[in-house]
Amino acid sequence: MTRIIKNGQIVNDDWQVLRLAEGQAAAEVKVPAGKVLVPLAVWRAHSDELIQRKHHGNDLGVWLAPEDDPSVLLSHLQEFAVIGIDFPVFRDGRGYSSAFLLRSRHGYKGELRAIGDVLKDQMFYLARVGFDTFAVREDKSIDDALASLKDFSEVYQGSVDQPVPYFRRRAA
Image (cartoon, rainbow, N blue to C red):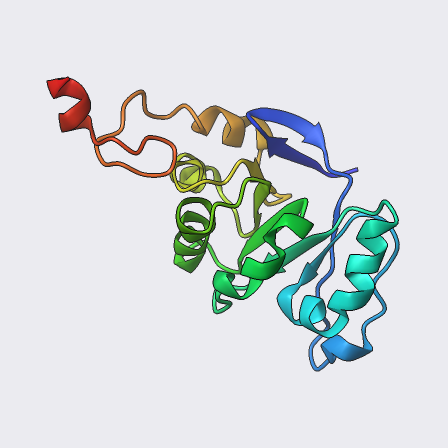
């Protein structure tokens, strides 16, 4: 079983991430049973079926690609136990903005998971914008990644994890 970092601890991951094969149409996908994070395109094609599964006790999760707009999920945010945000390459930072928007503007309170090319050097900053779960690349040390969440003891600018900037906290 794969291990992930969730709420500052290493735990077993009981979710599977569904990825479409090249050229595969979302409408033709058969969503497997169990806890599955489906891509936004599959959610759009099968939302009625997936909501019915949720109402029968199954957890529901969706993941966003960098080009996906998180606001398309607004009317269904409460349906998702997990929202994943994919980082296809570590240098693509659009997922930071999606996470920040989901947490700060849209009020998403569920699990927010970083998936894909997630490296320890990003972990502290990913947590700052609202991620609470990290699926670290399998070829990297999950223990090193966990330790990197404590790389810095203080932050200067405000964000999801600490909305008040340092100069205001210090003045108080």
